[in-house]
Length: 360
Image (tube, rainbow, N blue to C red; front, side, top):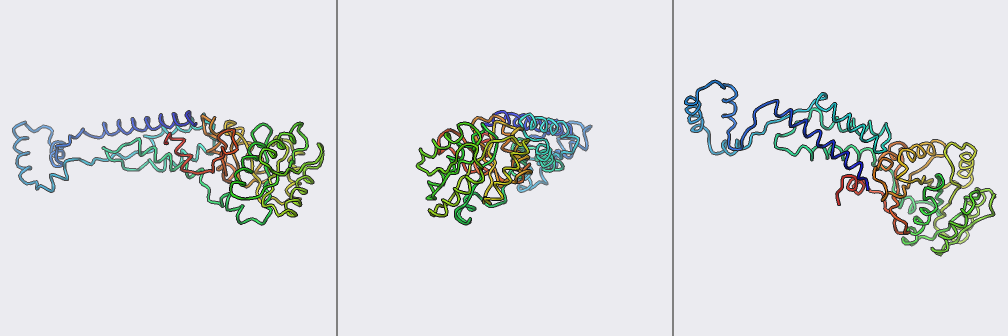
């Protein structure tokens, strides 16, 4: 998971480390751990002193230096300040690497800008671990891009009027139907009663596919014949949930391309009639920039409240997981990481960062 992106971040850390090392070397002499601060100062000021004069001067200085001063001077804390010019090359490489990792351009620019702000002008101790400092800057920048300041999925279910209607949108073949089944299983495990609405009345086999999941989970499926109005199907499911005292309605919709204006207008109609509490966009993490663009277009055309990314376990790049929250301004609720109903992970910033940087 995220191996490609992780390798690119490692390369960037090495690049900055080399830059810092070269600058340190150019700025001054290397200091041994047993040399005092005053000795270094005198050596730099009087490089032409004879060996005998140097020894005499050192002896006189040593007599004046107290035990406390000696202890403090065991390590010389020299500092290196990075400027814009120092990091031009590494930061450009970072931006290219991010885009190669399927991170959307505005997101890559934001990450690079944040890293630049963290590193340029910052004083780095000569004995510090530069790569750790750079990794911290990367983590802070990415966390700022993916952070979710809004309410969590579980909070919205708890606080929403029952039945809570959740509308799932996205294109065909991205795991939308399986994702609905996973969300249903999670809700059931948390003692919520669930009804599924088969709102995809166009694609051949769509109703049979979601019906199979409903049967396996022991859930009621509300469906009409193929070609029926999906708004009516979902409306009937909501009315059934009200009559039976059910907690949540999960509504499937026809997978459609964001460029199909007629179908997008139909989604708008579904929302007007059924007033879903949540509209969730579903796509594959491995789709990269395509998923990011689709999320953006669905959000602009229909309005989404958050996303679920399937197949995260197969994603070597990680660009979609980083980009979608920033581009849409809406959180990722869950990640799909396998084929089992239990393979649904709640979005967590620290968990995602740990996977990106190879931390177990």
